[in-house]
Length: 98
Image (cartoon, rainbow, N blue to C red; front, side):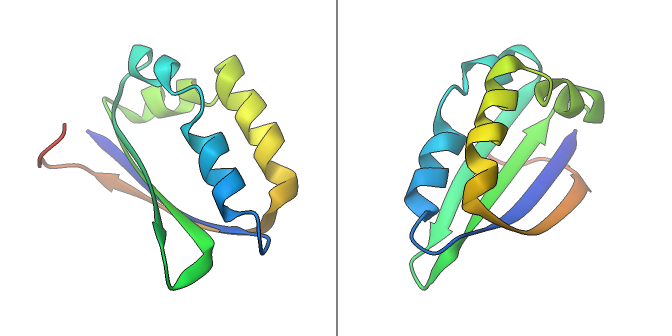
């Protein structure tokens, strides 16, 4: 399994708006091979959103970025972001919720 872990920095005051965008329209992700998608925030850090994903394959993850819903969400979110991202690709070995 392919994993992808992100830390996304948003402009101050826009965290909840970006979280809503990230959670909107998730139905198509399962169809292309998403096994787990979690959006989380830290109450002590008002500008960082963490997204954890598990996919059947790296190709499935790439295909998800071409979904019309994903392209629209990215376009809506981009003006609200600072441009600072941390992303790590992983090999998922197991766990709950997969």
